[in-house]
Amino acid sequence: MPNGEGNGPFPALAGSKVANGLAEEHINVVLYGRNNTMPAWKGVITDAEIAAVITYERNSWSNKAGDVIQPAQVAAMSNQQ
Image (cartoon, rainbow, N blue to C red; front, side, top):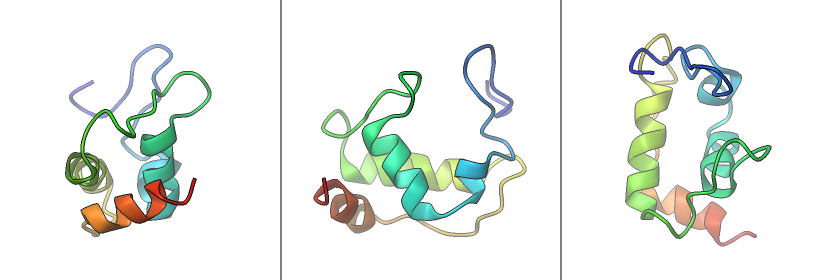
């Protein structure tokens, strides 16, 4: 949802533990998906696009992580598995 509240089987991003937790966990979820509900985006969109999406999620709505995820962070995590 545009307000980050989620809908149905899709959990809210606003206030979520993933969006407000460790950046590495957030990157991992976006790269590799989760629990057959979140698709894996590795190889579908670029590292720069993944970094931009994660940065937006971590700093929008009620989320105030205050960080800016870099494409190099995504690439590093992508090369670990």
